[in-house]
Amino acid sequence: MTQRKPAKGAGTAGKDAAPGRGAKRFYKDVAIEDRGGDGPALLLDGKQARTPGKARLILPTRPLAEAVAEEWRAQGERIDPSTMPLTRLANSAIDGVSGREKAVIGDIVAHAGSDLLCYRAQGPQELVEAQAAHWDPVLAWAKTALGAPLVLGQGIVHVTQPEGSLDRLKQTLASRDAFSLAALHVMTALTGSALLAFAVAERRLTPEEAWAASHVDEDWQISQWGEDAEAAERRKNRWRDFAAAAKTLALL
Image (tube, rainbow, N blue to C red; front, side):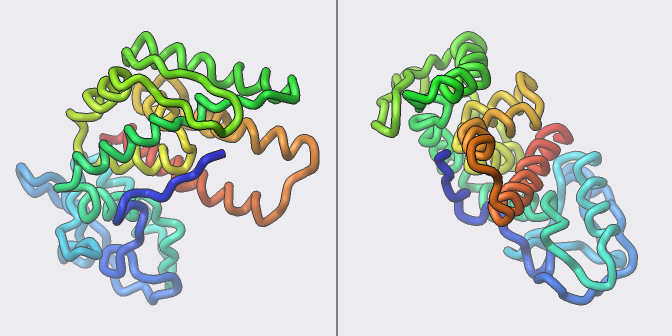
């Protein structure tokens, strides 16, 4: 499965809004304050929380702000950033995506140009059938609902996708804000598939269904030779970030 790195600033924990692992908790109270047209802001002991880039940590919706606040409330005597994926994604949206929307859209569309779902195994038959079962419905949906048919290939030889389809995907992303784009970018990078990210955003797939679809090859390998403990832990951590991105989309 192809994996790509997130855009600059994506998925990083902030030393202001999310201190380093093991840092002592420096606040008692967590609150949300509406800032008029700016949106709800996260307050720590009555003071404005800030991102690593020193921007105010202001969320686009109250539900998302409350979910971020719950991550801060759940911390113990020591802060564990790995348990704060929504906060990290908010930092990414504000510091790494806002003002760079076109570049992030371009990167998501570039993933679509070599989307995981378009590269099929030649065998064994069980794997071929599993890929088709999970991936063909998403490709059919992209063709009809998004107007973006993509070309399939076998193996790892690059397949050139229709420019019209990629342009259509770019147009679909054009109206999305920094938070939505940050979430879609993280989901795309974690799965190797822009189409799976689109499918979750448009509620064609649940996050669990999209995650399972992105791991068809890996799950087949596990069924043949078993699962490595370290790989399982990495997958668990990736799922945490994927689920947080999907939750962000749902709360916008």
